[in-house]
Image (cartoon, rainbow, N blue to C red; front, side, top):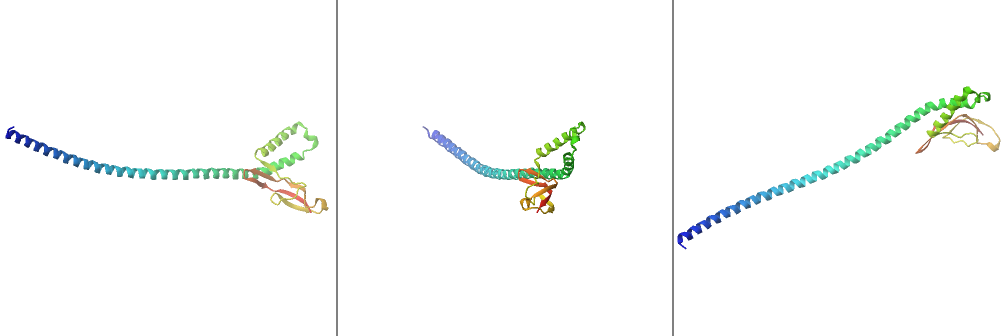
Length: 194
């Protein structure tokens, strides 16, 4: 091989080596940029995951608060409905009481009269209404008084056998049965033997 050829090959190799080194440097630089970009993306992904985690926690917290709010609203609604129902009952029960008293004192010769047929029907409807709404008449005669259910309006002297018992109901009392227990709507007015 001639020196010229050898020099040419050597100069070509040097150029190739230089070009290869330049390419390696470019690749190293490109790799460095890609690694930096990769680190930035990893940091961004980590930040996004943290935001997502916090958002999920906030969502669950808000959902729990909203569920609790809905439960409170439902309880408040039921309580308001119950209070409204009781207020209406307190206005209606005295009217029903007058009708029931009238019905109890219906003269015998009118009980089977055609004209009183509707009065019997109304009485049945009232009894059914009371039953359907868990409203009971407070027991009175021959029971011992209960200060929460009975209002003693008069006391009469009597023998020892029936002492301390109610002898007469002056006005009916009503109890409303609920899931929480009994609630006295109107106490019974009674006369007590003492």
